[in-house]
Length: 476
Image 1 (cartoon, rainbow, N blue to C red):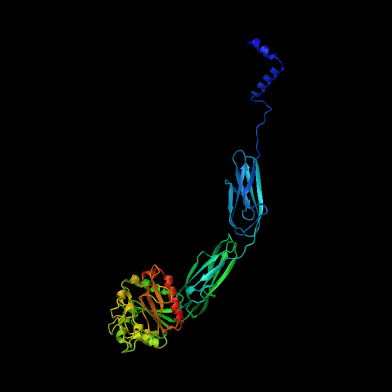
Image 2: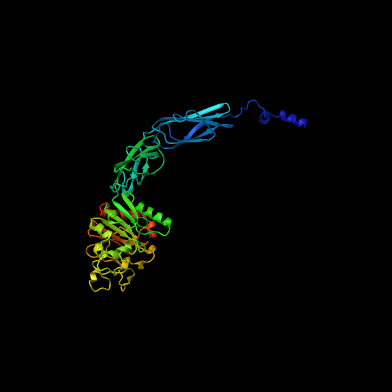
């Protein structure tokens, strides 16, 4: 073997070079091989660019990446926002919208003894303006737009104002609202509420509800809505006692809700007795919700015309009357014939023809009975044959144009509202007014009570709209 090795070593220049290369490649600790080394680097990869102008109030997020060996920690700072660098192990940081101005974001990466940083300078544009706000009061009133009606309240009665607001900046937000109920009051603290309930002043007069809204950079705006405090012009008479005390409370609240924004007083026949003409005469409008179980309405048929009754005296004296409830177009006392004769209360004040569907007196003034019971001489649509209140008509604000199951009034009055079922089908007339013509309405008789109709409870806005329409026709 030794002889063979000698032959290789002396075998020529090419062979010697091969062996030299072999020994170099196999040497692990050759001092000529330098170890790899990477300098620490950090780079911002997302967020406003250098020199950018961003929208006022716009949220923004910076993100960054790092090239390093070993563990890395970061410190970030947004000038004017972060008082000092903020330590973090994350690779992103979000900021809320900022006021107008110039800002610089800096991120510093630290790994062992090494440090590296990157930064961007950008501008936040000017605030485009304070929030826009709208106050909504009763009867469709509003600080801008709205019905133009001025809400009115009896002294000391509760009132409610609601509002909406939105910052004009695309990414802004309303930070809070504050309000005062009269010009003499102080503002409360800014908060997130969008409704205010309060007791109106006790002194009659004109007042202003003032609302301020502030956005998240401190810009504010103001809106106002006028309201009036005055002696009640409407009296709401409860002539339909409820068997359940809770229902009685709910009924009272229901009528207070639909008359929100009107100056009204209340009268409960069950506790206060039947009102006299002296009790009614201070008011311009009397609403009576009644029915077959009433104490007051059942007395009217037996008293009139033999003796004057309060409602006839009230109307004759210029008062406006609105009566609603099951049976209110009948003489439920049984004191007179149904249908009424020409001199009875229903004929005199409703101007209803004293004729029925099978009467030969005047076919054009006939009653077309609900359910087509044309042979029944009782007078028709308001009759209890309608049955359970859940089946009574729903209200709508459409004018009567000729449908089935109509009450046909005399020429002195007219049908003003029709009912619609849940699917939109017409189910008949629901209210008459007198005199005809659409203005100066003196009397409205409605063939169903609001509160007892479950569909009305699910549609309080419809009840309120109809109430406002009738009150307008009665000068309120």
